Amino acid sequence: MFQAVIFDMDGVLIDSEPLWHQAEQQILGGLGVDFSRPPLLQSTGLTTAAVIAHWYQHQPWPVLSPEQVHQQIIDFVASGVASSGEPKTGLLALLAENARRQLKMAVATNSPKLLLDTTLQRLQIRQYFQAHCHLELVSRGKPAPDIYLLAASKLDVAPEQCLVFEDSFAGVTAAKAAGMTVVAIPAAHEWQHSKFAIADYKTRCFTEFDWRQLG
Image 1 (cartoon, one colour):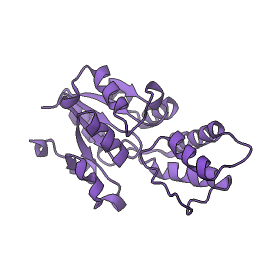
Image 2: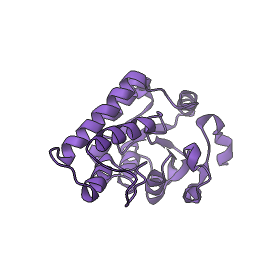
Image 3: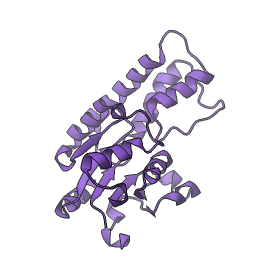
């Protein structure tokens, strides 16, 4: 049924979401952003540029440009990944199983190339992926489908033959818009949220995933 598996990166390959939260709180908070003031933002799955643009529009800060703030956040997260990043539970076993099944694999992330390269190097998993798709390769990040369509193209597989693992609603939306089958892996605090009903399947972690459940 499936010829390829495409993985989101942050929160799927690696538990980097806390690093993103720390970076935003420390860097944007240090610039005076009050995250408790509306309009509030659920930033998981959005591009860093979109998060910065949101807060800059509503609570503009002096001195640093949005581009400079963007680079500071990326550098913060990259440093954390390089020093202490760990694969998500069950990931390495699933990658090995997918390879045994001769499935093509790709990463499709809203993060820039620096973070993708840092993550693959830290986790020592680059060899599993035939395509590495990052934000700098597309004009629109998730929730637009562009990056998933790019990944399918690079793998030379039709979108409907791709299975996607995603942890964010923006990512699930993107993959569904690309015509792919999606397994959602929501964070624990979002497990019951109805928004993930658009996913085809839902699992708490890779160790709970079983290819047989896909029929």
